[in-house]
Amino acid sequence: MNEKDTGIIDKSGRASSDLRIGYFVHDVSRLRRTLFDQKMKPLGVTRSQWWVLAQLGRSEKTLGEQGMLQTELANVLDVGKVTVGGLIDRLEAGGFVRRMPCANDRRAKRVVVTEAGRATLRQMQSVSQELNALILNEIPKEFIPVAEEVLAKMKANIMRELHGNTAGSEYLAEEEL
Image 1 (cartoon, rainbow, N blue to C red):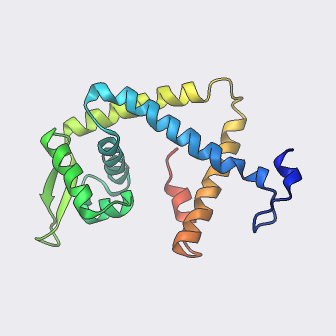
Image 2: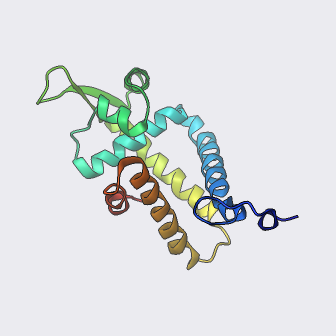
C-alpha cells in the first residue's frame, strides 16, 4: 500500500507522501555535514568550530572585518552563550579567531577571524566546492536553479513562521549558496 492510499493528509491538505521532501532535505544536509567533517578532520577543525568560522566568514562579507559580538554569534548559531564561549576559546587557542573589545560597549567582545582563520575558510570553501561537484554529479544543470529556488522559498517560509510575517525574504537576498 502506498502512502497516498493511506488517506493520511496533513493540515495543508497534502498527502503524506508529498512530505518526503522534508526527509530528503534532512538526510542530504546530515550526509553532507558528515562528509564535510571527514574532509575537515586533517585541518583539526571540528563541526562546531567550522560552523562558527563559517558564520564569522559570512558576517565579514556583509559587515566587513568588524567581527561579531559573542551574543550575536550565539543567536545566529542557536546555541547558548556559554557554548559559543567555549567554541571561541578553542578557536582562539588554535589561532583561528581573536576577541577584541567592542568600541561601543567595554563589556562586550567582538570575535574576528585571524589570517589563519581566513586561510582555513578558503580551504573550507574549496572543500565545499568539491563536495557540491560530487553531490550535484549527474544532475542536469537546469535543475539546479529550480532546486535552489525551492529550498530558498522553503527557508523563507520557515523563517516567517518562526519570526513573523516580515521575516524570511531578507534571508533570500543575503543567502550565498
